[in-house]
Amino acid sequence: MPKPLLLLAVAVSLSSLTAQAQYIVAGSTTNARYINLRPNKVLAGQRPGVNQSTDSLDLDGDGRFDLQLTAVVSTVNFPSYAEAQVHPRHDDVALYSSSQAPALVAFAAADTIQARGPQPASSLPPNTWGSRSTIYPYGPSWLVRLNNNPAGNQSYGMWLGGQDHYLGLRLRAGGSWRYGWLRLLVQTTGTDRLIIIIKDYALGNAVLAAAAAPSQPWQVHPTPTHDWLRIDLPPTATLRQLRLLDVCGRPVLTPAQLPADARLDLRALPAGTYLLHGQLTDGRQLTRRIVKQ
Image (cartoon, rainbow, N blue to C red; front, side, top):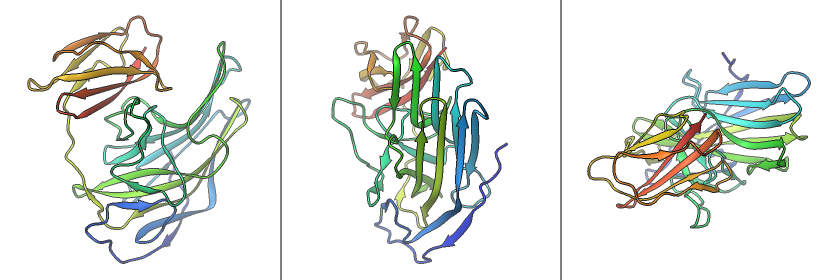
């Protein structure tokens, strides 16, 4: 069980936000619960040595862990990988995720973090807020992923380069959302060493935007799966578009429009993690993370 981080809490601002405020600015501590980690929390995975380091954060100080962070590298030299992982611990916390889920969006200082964040090109699935039961039910998201395999060396993620970035997050409170940020830095030296440096974070004191009740317009099962994937829709819902993407955001399966209770044949796909993205005829966007074994 991960131990709680040793924190120095800096109380910032006791005034409440206006009812109209629906955002927080990355790096700002105004009207927020602000925690400065002194010294910074460092998670390191390396080969040879300890290949995995994990810790958790209680963002609002209620005694419940909200996020788990892990620096991990593979125990073998080839093929090998390294990941900086973040995992929501429950469904009352959500992370702003890129269209190449499970990668996470990196915000810069002074960027606005709000319900509707920056979006990619229209040809890609939209960025979205993801919780444990939506796109992260079977594993973590990542800041950075490095691979070394027969296809060569690959690096993915918005946190490459060894610079500070801000993770956009929100926490459900009384049927509404508190928006916040977490400042991190990721350092890598290939797939044999990866370090996450956790510096500070802030969570708005006031409720910033009404949180919609959890909606389940479709069910996808089983996952993990070995062969077939079943998609169950409500009787009145119809899919306009359905795509299965790999972790780099590339379409690997794009079937024609499907009726309710459709099935997808995944037998030809290699084992791994995929993102199932669909759009209903009423315009709603649907996203699920899929694990093929």
